[in-house]
Amino acid sequence: MQALLLAWFQTNGRDLPWRRTRDPYAILVSEVMLQQTQVERVVPRFLAWLERWPTVDALAAASPADVIREWQGLGYNRRGLNLHRAACIVAADGWPEDLTALPGVGPYTAAAVANFAFCRDVLPVDTNVRRVQERTGHSFSARSAQALMDLGATVCLARVPRCNSCPLADACPSRGRRYEPVRRQSRFEGSFRQRRAATLRLVAAEERTLAELDREAVESLCADGLVAVAGGRVSLPA
Ligand code: SF4
Image (cartoon, rainbow, N blue to C red):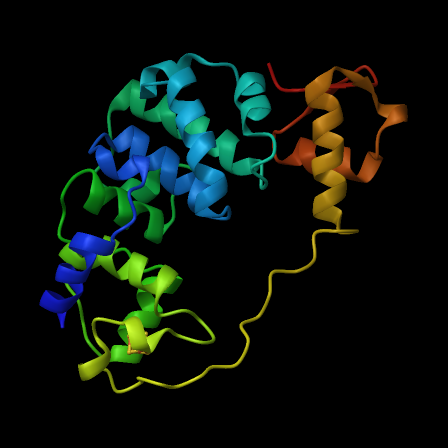
């Protein structure tokens, strides 16, 4: 099965900019952006980020305020701040053996960086990879990571898999099955997440007084280190 998958990937794999490098910093940036943002939206933002901060040292030297501004529109802004904190640690001490020691790096992101940058024999299991493994009942090696991700993202879809164009169909016990709709992410419209995002956007544009902002959102942003409050004024962290 793995041979079939890898042969399919040779001609059908997605050409993504973070796949053209083994630079752990660039790969970490891509993986953190991809945690909760779709691939199509991440591509231009990843390229812009690398142009602005091409190395881990360059990002470490940036101010948190600039990093938060650059992250605007990607959502879940704490990711940007954690990426900056991780860059500061790596710039000072190098890459840790256990990548989960870095802020914002969980087991999946650590496995992805370990595989794609450091060529370690570890399979990063995201929802796409897990789905293909479960449906085929096959245990793929770390070498198949990107191929599994692409098959899960473009062929072995969550609800109606495209088994007719799947390279694994002949050997797959789940061929032809349909699945229940997957649980959708909670609505953004009208959510507290939206209020936080709107408040952060205002502060990113310019320093504001506390009185003109959503106080609850400011408190939450402040607790996450995304804004600073002093003398009744709210600004991005210095
Ligand atoms: S045959 Fe269908 S269910 Fe099986 S891996 Fe391919 S797309 Fe997924």
